[in-house]
Length: 401
Ligand SMILES: NC(=O)c1ccc[n+]([C@@H]2O[C@H](COP(=O)([O-])OP(=O)(O)OC[C@H]3O[C@@H](n4cnc5c(N)ncnc54)[C@H](O)[C@@H]3O)[C@@H](O)[C@H]2O)c1
Figure 1 (cartoon, helix red, strand yellow):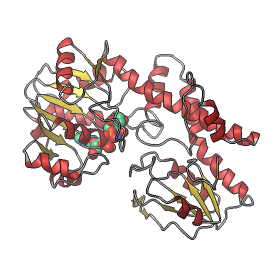
Figure 2: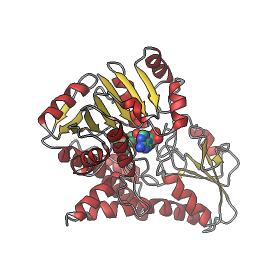
Figure 3: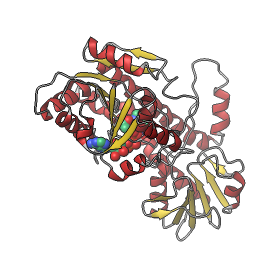
Figure 4: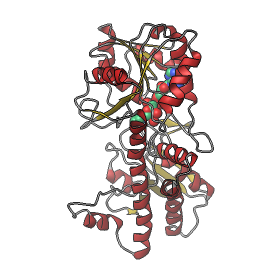
C-alpha cells in the first residue's frame, strides 16, 4: 500500500515514521522549508530521530513533498493538519479545508481517507467528505474514517505502538480497512460505533484535563489564602487509593490541545443548545492564572515591578519540548511588562521565539519559573536572582504557588 500523510508536524511526522516501516509513505506538507529539511534527513520534532528519517529515505520508504500530484495513486490518505481557534476562539477548519482541496484535486482512484486532526463531532461526515467531493473534478467513492491522535510529544513510555487507538469508519468497509492499516504498527485498537463518538471522545479527554487543571489552579489560590501548601495538600489527598486523580497547579495551560480542544466541544454543544459552563469557566480560570501569578510576584516585591529586571525561565508550553504554541509564558510576560518590568527569558530548548533569544540564567532582580526543562539546573535558577517565584513546584527553596 502507498500512504500519503497530509501535514508533517508533530502528528503527521510521527505517523509517517511508524507507517514507513511497513509502507511507502509520502509526507505532504505546505511548508517548503520543512520539506527540504525532512528530505535531507532532519527531523524537527522530539521523539522522532533524524537518523530514522534518513534510514527511511535511503530505503525508499519515505519522502516529503509539497506537490499535490505526489499523493496521486495512494491507497490511504491520513489528514494531520492544525485545527486551531479563530481570534474569537471558535473552531477554525481552514487547514482541514485546504487539506481536503489537496486530496480532492489530486486523487484519481478510490482511497481510504482517515482524519487524525482533532475536531468536533460531525467533522468527518459533514465537512471532510463533502469538501473532498466538492474539490474532486471527477466522482470517486472514497472510504472515510476517523482515528483521533493521542501522541504526547517527548513522552517515551507511551507511543504509537502501545497507546490504545480509537477508530470508526463512515461505513463498515472503511472501519475494516482502517483497522488493517493501524494494526501494522499499533497493538491496541478500539472500534467505536460511529465517527462522532471517536471525535467526541478525543475532545472529552482533553476537556477532562482542562477542567481538572482549572480546578487545581483555583485550589492553589484557595490554599494560598488559607496559608497552607497546595502541594502538601494535594499529596495528602493523593494518598486515597481510589476516587482521586492528582493534577498540579501551573501558570496556565499551553500546547495545541488543552487550550484549543475544549472550545471545539463548547462550540458544538452551544450550537445544539446544550450547556458548556464548566468548559467556558475552566478556560477563564486557566487564562487568569498568569495574572494571579504576576500579582503575587508584585505583592512580594513592594507592589511595584517598574524597571525591575525579571527573568522568565521556560517559554515552552511544557518541559523538555521546544513547542511554544499557546504557552502560558506569553501571558506571564505580557502582564509583567504591563507592570513596567524589563522582561527577558531563558529557554535553551526553544532558543529563539517572537524575535527574541534565550538569555543567560543570571543577573536578574526577579526570576519567575514557568516551565522547567530537566536540563535546567535548580541551583542556577535559585542563584539567578534574589527573589525566585516557581510556578512548577519543582524548585525547592523558591517562593511558589
Ligand atoms: N501535537 C500534539 O501533541 C497532538 C496530539 C494529538 C492530536 N493533535 C492534533 O493533530 C492535528 C495536527 O497537530 P500537530 O501538532 O501535528 O500540528 P503541527 O503544527 O505540528 O503540524 C501541522 C503541519 O501541517 C502543515 N500544514 C498546514 N496546512 C497544511 C495543508 N493544507 N496541507 C499540508 N500541510 C499543511 C503545517 O505546515 C505543519 O507542518 C491537530 O488537529 C491537533 O489538534 C496534536
